[in-house]
Image 1 (cartoon, rainbow, N blue to C red):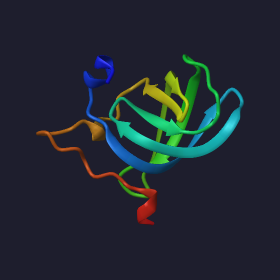
Image 2: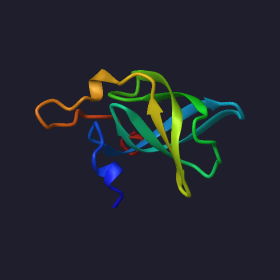
Image 3: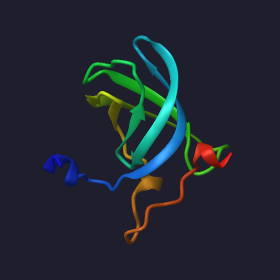
Length: 108
């Protein structure tokens, strides 16, 4: 495993959240596969450039609570891309080692 990924600033959690995001090419919907206070990994076959700006909207703690964040593509993998947020989502910062409960689309 890449040591850079093992030293993340915020712990990540596996997720299954449908996100709507806007990039230069348009507005799209894909799945957030993991999330942390500082970013997400979105599963997609779209090819976005590293450094490209992204605006993302998704439900987080309940389906009526839509989070709107912006960031940039930090890396691209064959299965999708990672986005680093411009501003941390405070509600996802782990307290006392526990990751807060988040909504999952499969729970609908």
